Length: 318
Image (tube, rainbow, N blue to C red; front, side):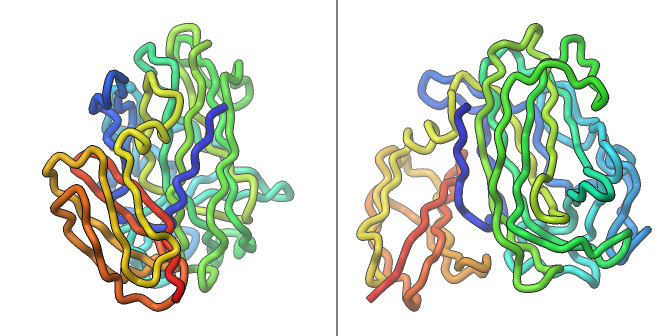
């Protein structure tokens, strides 16, 4: 198993465009959905700013990619959270208007979400998604919050037929560790999580990914992106660009070097540990020196290039 968690808690436009070729490796975008263009507008049903209609009623077929999927299977209730309603606060803005909510409670029910895709005969599956603990006021809640953990299993699904009752052979699995709860039970504290899973033993390249929240009573996911690849890890894409920050820790001034700078549009955003944007810069050369003007603390530097997004944790101490 090849697991890489990209530790940035917040990012407005986040996903790696896997359908581009990096060096000699092939990456194919199978599925991508930021959950912003529903089939019908989500409305409050069982709770304020919570729509408990079936996922496919709101989101079936709305994703991008050539994996042949787009319709989910769900076990129990999977809710759509209306972020911009009256109940919730998203200081980072990463969740935008909507996201998907899941329950983890062995005494009540354990929600699961599954997506079946054709991996296009490539041996590795790369996944990225936003994850945040969050609670709901009704619909049986509140359920209590903890640091979010999501278990991911990828099953061999010959012919594309999958059921939770008989899921088939597990090809690989990983557990993703998210952030701690936000400032209130209804404040999002997003973390962008990424991992690679080995699907090389699939019989016909048709696989099913199952999302299963295993820690925190309730949590949300958003901005799912799934690709198949010849690469064994998303980390290899980051190493290819060789982006360096120094010194780190810094006294407030930091240097950035990019080994593969290609005169492209590059934006650097500095956020704090609560996802608040502190600074934003346009990077115009291979080597750049910036005065951040920030107090001592831990921050996250998010670099967006034409085709990728990267993060670096930076520490300021004087």
